[in-house]
Image 1 (cartoon, rainbow, N blue to C red):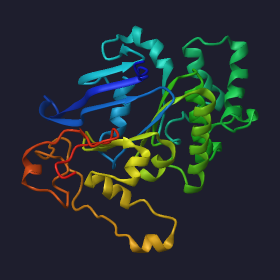
Image 2 (image 1 turned 90 degrees about the vertical axis):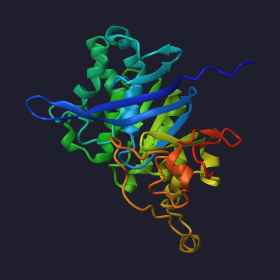
Image 3 (image 1 turned 180 degrees about the horizontal axis):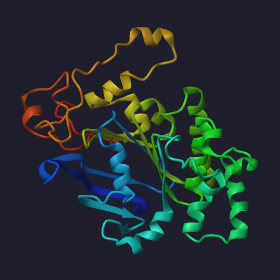
Image 4 (image 1 turned 135 degrees about the vertical axis):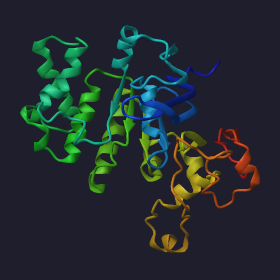
Length: 326
């Protein structure tokens, strides 16, 4: 029997932005390659973690997958349908099936709208319920994310960061989606609140059969929620593995550096291990290095790394890495 078709399949996705100069007659002087040919697939009901430092293109990739940005090139197939060729009207049903939880719970909610108005807006836009049933549905969604129904008349400024993120999650669930892009949903929250929100997302996945693309800049959070992990650097995926394989045996030097920054709760082990400190800053995606994009910061780079770009190759157990020294 053939394996089931992935819910989401992305091939060679590119998201390039023109760089322009001049005020009266702007002219294009370059191209910012935020996402430069990534491929991934997510089976129904799983969580794929997408990790990398700020500026590597993770959030742009998430928005391009949802067609919030129209990709420059590549394919995005959702449940067998190619999304990149759909017009605005044809895309509308898929807007309901795919949603996003944003990073900043302070900026993602309209301060002039009550909680009821914020959560009910997508329900009304998609015409899912009549007016008499909308308020009841908002109350159900608030209880689903651990908030009281009585809070629906309040405004966002009356809530803590963790509560606002729960409201954002309730808003994403309002149209009963199948797939959710979680764009660093806990990075703006206190550490004490992060675990609560992550546990909520995992519980909702089990109860509602959701599929997640979980974007984060640290591997510590991704380790607990992801079935598989893709490590992204400067618009490219450099390593792809199951969560267990990546944390037990990372192959790419960039993945090793990210893992070395994750604290270990055992003080004895933490004292013995050494941090991998990367030299220099992340290069500009408008002018990426030749060859392997990581070679300018890699401690084990050789001449081949500077001249030839490696491709993702399977090293067994579906563990893929793009590195000449792996």
